[in-house]
Image (cartoon, rainbow over all chains, first blue to last red; front, side):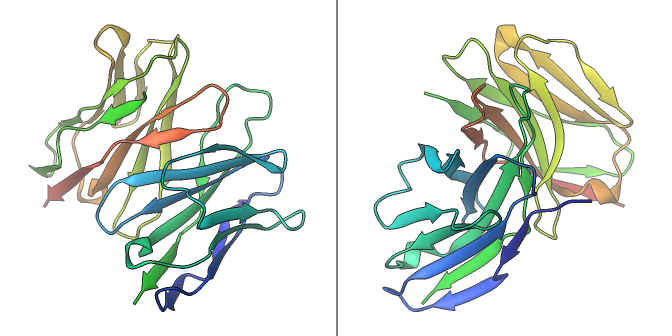
Length: 116
Length: 114
């Protein structure tokens, strides 16, 4: 069964360092998303991406964050200068929508980011 | 503004009990979508159900059932005859029709004891 894959599964970084989290969405999906979950807390929307551009972003997604689809398969989230409060599990998701008005989100297993 | 409220932070039941997880939402959109996701202890997020705002028919899938009431902006989830494997965090979510944003409630942690 197709799945969303994320790398790395866990990354430890020093405050102020740049981090890139990678995702390979399901191949025929057109909508891509990043969410984050601080330990034990709610799942927070960061950004959605469609047709090679950001379609929606939350107030969390400030200038320190960026997303890119550098090729036909990868979808990346970059944090330019990490802060302690960026420590969280980051989930990538994709959706097909395929003509329907709404579709379920297929989530990856997450990338745990620890900022020291 | 869109908002999803899951007032129950944690629920603990004994196996075979029925349990209902509450979800109340706010949106100005006339058309929208509601979802439930499950997050077991292993951490992944698993889709359970999607409901369109214009379809208030309740749904049953095995031991799971969902009660959507537009008049009270609620989309409650009932597990009948709970099992230990149902122990997880359950998230209610609200999505726009464009497919661009789905927001999650804070989640309800369900403990099912043997």
